[in-house]
Image (cartoon, rainbow, N blue to C red; front, side, top):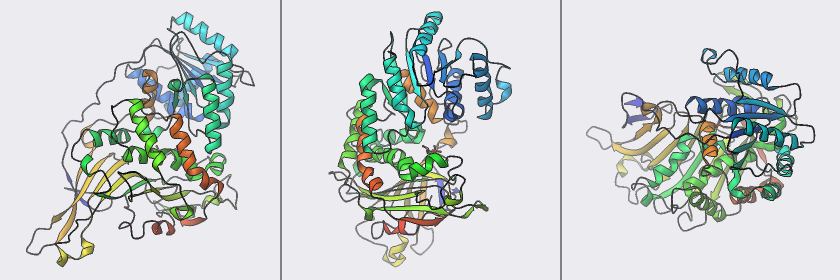
Length: 506
Ligand code: BG6
């Protein structure tokens, strides 16, 4: 028996003494991995460490070449390699694991001329492929600021880099658009040069192990699917809470806010995975089709379904933290939302009448991402003498981070003469059974290399998601203050009034 952070006693039901390794995947085909924006933050923090791990695990063949591309003309192959090595160390890879210098021809750099002309890049790519005898398989990864996506896609297409003797796949980071019109325009630009099956839109939440496991949990177990509907489920809560503020990203965040930064993509992905119908097969198109259908069934949002918040100063882990408006680079009169809670209605036969509550915020009490499925209470209350309020509804909690796993909460009789109820839980934690989980970017990059688009965002999904939220961007709800270190503004609780026992606090 152990105790969770919330103080609920728990029962461990599954663990083995030695951690198990994840099943090994087969390596990808040799290719040229081209990263546009290779001197940026994402390359150093995520992409290069993930590529390094893939190579170390034998999943990226030695013959594959990584070609960093950027506007900086002061870099060459050698200085780029030194920079990549330093970034690996900064990302936590022990220095003694690395050679003193990266040498050799599978990590290269190409400067782009201003204006993005990619003809010189196309020539360099052809010459590398010839020299290394690569089959012409290419990944074009746009690790660029959003405003640079369309110009880069156009330049690549105009230089003929949308096709090759092997396969060509283009990877586009988030945010994909900033409202419905911009997402549609970006899709049009992409489709002018690339077919949809060449396109991999990233949402790093889809690379997280527990997120992928939602599908396995639902469709590989016969226990839950018969309960997964309006007859047995009262509500679903999806929370992604962060303790962090906006760090050094004021410029981006001021123009984005929590609705664009987290809700439109990550939380809505979690919602569609939770609500989707059983796909006809466990393959990309079938799964993405079912997810898109959910979005099309969501009722338009009104202000009464949404609460925006912005953090004021407060304490996190005993440390004073400033208000959002006092963060460097933020306007003193900023109305940008750092918290969103909303209530969605999925109007189909499975979910009619079941609210989906989505909540995310910066500077909240704890870092936690989870999906809570609240089951209905028993129709007849037999244990009246224990008091109605002592009966908790059953819950299934899927914890995405930290400490990934699943909990099922249920009522038991407390031992003793009197009938007294107590809430207990069966739980599974990945860390009890498995070795540490791979980083989301490792999973996603390997999927790109292998041509599996299951965990990527399709054109219609991204447009439908923006279609749902754009009215809130054009006609913004009021923004309520909340103290840093709290669970958001009290107004968010009103969304649940009369519908559940209240937010489940991780
Ligand atoms: C990013 C957002 O997409 O996701 C960040 O831009 C946020 O603001 C981050 O902090 C959260 O990701 P994770 O994996 O740490 O939950």
